[in-house]
Amino acid sequence: MSIELERYPANFISTIIEGDQASGRHGGRVKTRFPPEPNGYLHIGHAKAICLNFGLAKDYSGTTNLRFDDTNPIKEDAVYADSMREDIEWLGFTWAEEKNASDYFEILYDYAVQLIRDGKAYVDSLDAEAIRSYRGTLTEPGRNSPYRERSVNENIDLFGRMRAGEFPDGAHVLRLKIDMSSGNMNMRDPSIYRIRHVHHHRTGDDWCIYPLYDYTHCISDALESVTHSLCDTGFEDHRPLYDWVLAQLEVPGQPQQIEFSRLNLQYTVTSKRKLKQLVDTGLVHGWDDPRMPTIAGLRRRGYTSASIRDFCRRIGITKSANNVELALLESCVREDLEPSAPRAMAVLDPVKLVLTNLSEDETIWLDVANHPKNPEMGVRRVPMTRTVFIDRADFRLEANRKYKRLVLHDEVRLRGGFVVRADSVVTDQEGQVVEIHGTYDSQTLGVNPSDRKIRGVIQWVSATQHSKVCFQRFQPLFSVPAPDASETDYQNLINPSSLQRFEGVVEVSVEDKPEGTRFQFEREGYFIRDPEPSEQGLVCFNEIVGLRDSWAKMLQSDKAS
Image 1 (cartoon, rainbow, N blue to C red):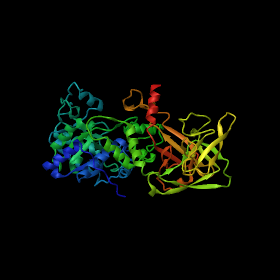
Image 2 (image 1 turned 135 degrees about the vertical axis):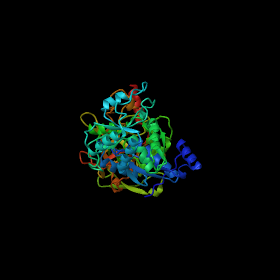
Image 3 (image 1 turned 90 degrees about the vertical axis):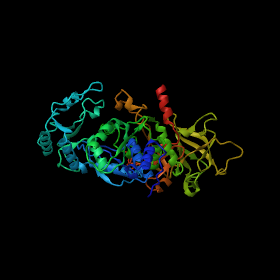
Image 4 (image 1 turned 60 degrees about the vertical axis):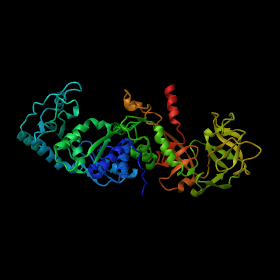
């Protein structure tokens, strides 16, 4: 199915692109790339980068490559690459070419040999700790390695033997020869190759030396004729190194790196390392846990790709760091679902309402609109029987007039049905109501009685014709707005109420809807069926988002107390 992708609002990157096109830079072409490392699952922060790279390229009739930065086989796996492809396609984007940094291992090696021959790279035999100490600090210049002046022939020999596997991990690294007194730490003879005797998921055991990101990335961009290399501001200090490497080599393209602010979303961590720890320690139920900010988690929860794209456009493209409210993302989801989600009724905490003036064997079939504002979505048949379930929170023995639900000796309307009155209750030994007895007014289907005022409208489900299901409701995974900034171990900031489960009922019409249907369970929220059953074997529905932003007020109340 073709997905219409909306144009990005004007921003500083689009201004750069338009200036480049006007001047004829890059021949007027626009080509971007999205270069994830396959060492985890993509998250909402990556969604911003994906939408930006693919969206801007499309806006200017350009193309985008998907390139896996697979230069660290210790952490990488083909499973992660597969999940990334799925996520990008689900978001609605198609890449022009799929590339891998490992595709360029041979040419990257040849370029490194050329740098050695030109006296711009050398093999350093200091260990990692010594290299760090020689680099200096932000206020003190670094010192030249004692191996910096090795001859070209010795460096060529050592580098070749590194590739041949003669040395153990950590014995040598290949470093660029730039400036150990530079004010930019990235320019103090950065390492560009290290030894790692590790099986690679694509190249197998062909290589035991692997290039580092700062060296690999800029050359890969050039080889692919990328014009605008978009990355977050964490790489701004790396840009001089990006440009320096390209300036030393005869490469087919001259890409320009442009930085934008990364997404910081409240009550969320987006570090793949931290997300992996959440999975590995069992604090969540996997990478696709609906509480996770991963694209897989958001998809399982029921978020739509259109709502995520809309969110990424709304937060804008700037260089300034910002902390985006989770409420904005949820608002985008609601706005996307409201006109399209069919309505249905669900009761999360059921209590019986027995309509004593309806016989046991009688069923009244009601035609109820699937959407109150869209007649084209049709109607569904809902059975009203002698006994129905209503939500326990929708009944009180007594209440003031502000309470708009059912009260003993008063009336309320059943959604899509009749006005009912509560006449008496049955309680258990602890005094808890287990049954409400009442009557329905047969003259009130679609008609308000003229002689009395009805409190409100509540949802309900037949007690004899329904599906028993599990509901999962979610709150933010973390209990503080900025868990990354807290001095407390972020794992201790987990919100204990982030997952709540209920066993309740839904109307039978839900069973007839296709898999993947997103419902608005009236007066409750938007829900989607989870692919896995509950522990009790029940069909489980995930709450995608509530009908209003209620959790933020609750968290503010918790902090105030």
